[in-house]
Image (cartoon, rainbow, N blue to C red; front, side, top):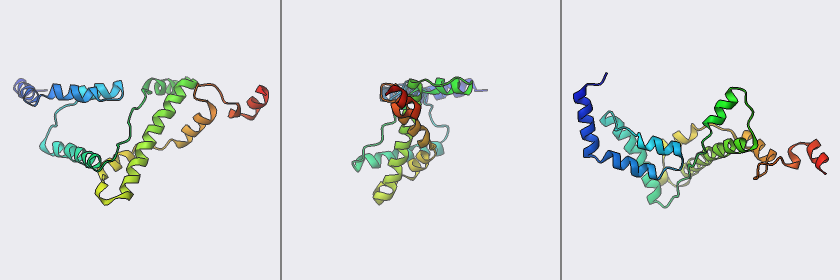
Length: 169
């Protein structure tokens, strides 16, 4: 249970640092509604060690930006509801499957980016971000199957199955 004096002190720290304004400005840069909510709820670090860890992450990204790198876009589509439906046995429709594939491609793009920069230039080492990106999972086969099955409009491709192509012809 939190102590009222500790809560008051934490509130004073947040106000002194303009924390709510900083979080709101960060949230305005978010590429998804989930990211926006996470930015607005970002807590202050619990310890100096945690603050140093976060600053090390920021320093890696800042170094890449100063060297002229464009960081990968991380506009993840909102797929939590789709995943919950699948867990309950509901099939995904073309649009939902496209969103899941887009999510997986975004993760793969981040993995490729940090893998590429690690081998390019010693000044662009970002071991913390590379480790984080490497943990995003590999779903390339799912993406390939979704792209081969549905076109950009969400329609089944003729080549989705031999019988479908033959019947449509």
